[in-house]
Image 1: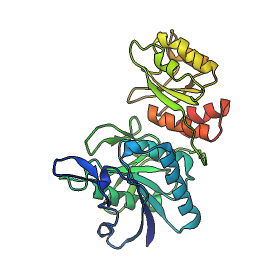
Image 2: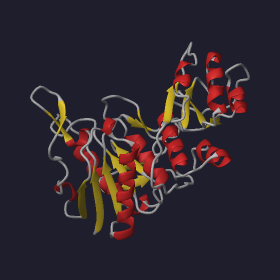
Image 3: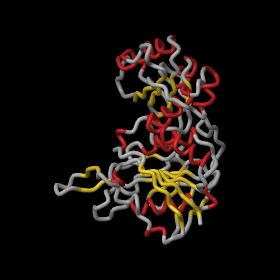
Image 4: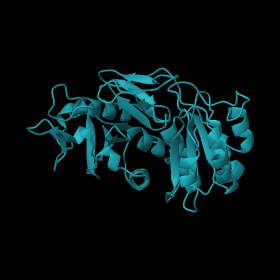
Length: 325
């Protein structure tokens, strides 16, 4: 019989509707001690580590989850880990763990779009599926996984695409790597290579700014101070910005603040295609790091992890630029 550690961190999966129809946190997680779904086939160890709505989750919280899992790997006989989490920042926590944990035992993150007492609640079902995935032998070596709505996604590329739909988690461009059947996980794609940064702290001052039509340099000037350690820009299209932003962006570069460029588009990757003022070719020549395949929030997590691992210069650019590692 396999042993799975379930780490609960809060979120909708642990909440309930009150008499007014408002979704609120519970004092006790309604699924934390739920064993009937496992039919005596899996030994479940429970750790109610946090009870946080996911907008309250910070990189410091993510680091504590990582450290808890490392203790499990080093000291306990556990075959896999499942983390329940609020969906708003689930993809960021999952990717943080993917970047900082060794690719050994399966680590699976799940959540819910409907609270525990709503009609059609998906929390218990997703929790059961996540446990099945963590207990499946084929899940080893796949990196951190996100399991929702019968699909298995990599933490690297999955994103929340709908505010309330139970099918909200999708992997643009690439699709899920597997599905959950009644008894186990089935995989149809393989994870490409990984690179792990075993950090013991997280830096502050890593920002994310989204480009828009008519944008000027005000937002960039506002963060041009000694507390800023890095910046991700969600550029237009294939990776372009309005020309009015360029002087402010150059000032950030002059102050040795690393800047990563991704696309704000739902699909595709940032590329140095356009050769005009503010185009990707100019931005790359200015020193921006083009990151291919990650959305803005994921690129920010990767830049934060890289900086927390004391990477700089070409080493940092290599780490951040390629989403396949």
